[in-house]
Amino acid sequence: MLPALRSTWALFLGIALIMLCNGLQGTLLGLRAGLEGFSTSVTGAIMTTYYLGFLAGSQLVPGLVGGVGHIRVFAALASLASSSVLLHTIFVDPWAWGLMRFITGFSYAGLYIVIESWLNERATNETRGQLLSIYMLVSVGAYASGQFLLNLGTPSGFQLFILASVLVSFALVPISLAPIQAPAFEQRERLGLGRLYRASPLGIVGAIGTGVGNGILVSMAAVYGLALDLSVAQITMLAAAIQIGALLLQWPIGHLSDIFDRRLIITIVTFLAGAVALLGIPAEAIGGWVLLLALGLLGGLNLPMYALCIAHTNDHLNPSQMIAASGSLVLANGLGASV
Image (cartoon, rainbow, N blue to C red):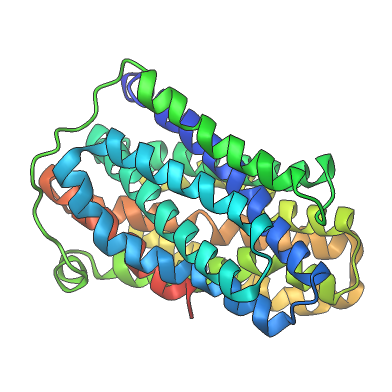
């Protein structure tokens, strides 16, 4: 594990900065949309365009990576994501925001493909679950921390949008300057959903399922808090509880998947998440810490599932298939999240 970590630390630092931005931006937009008088249905539609962009990025970015390499694609997409954040403050309109969220989704899909395919090329079947768990641990921890950055400004102002843009711009620094070797960018093997499903049915089905669950859980947390008449501070805690739960359970679940059959771990975690979701109904009526604990446990079981699906799928692939597989898994996850 240590050699793999030494060769990928810049990726983890880069994704941490990106997810700080994502955590701040997602909740910020939900709050700002409410303050601007957007209805819940309009806000939900705006948030959904993020996943439509995700789908487009998952199809187009693998070819770019194969043509010009991981580092150049990462730099271009990070710049695009940074610019789109700022445009929300210039064009305060549902249609414009929908377009910006589409661009953001496209950019983030590509960034995930770059990082996940890079990590999978550095991992072995014996370390893949742990390495991807660290990736998700960093991602979730940074995303949760991003929620608290809301307290550095007001949702009605522009300062928080500038902060989000700066964070994703800084992500370029470690990736561009660190002395780490990127994978070779020869043309890779194409691997669509059909072929990937034949190689790993559970990986594709699991990626779609986690997209549905995590898309609802993460994207609509702020809107859910507003519907319960919670304050900004309480909504921040609500959104952070989901991420903190994942932060605590990500590593143990990933480590277990390296020890036992990944299919068994995926099945057990899925059933536990379903049971906790049902317990969330009475938890909402009780409110307070009970609701926070329920959402934290649900996030702790739901969010790590995607890393398990990635690991299980890549266990059955060779390195030349991993970029295309990352794109197809992102596509499957985005399809689920856009439902």
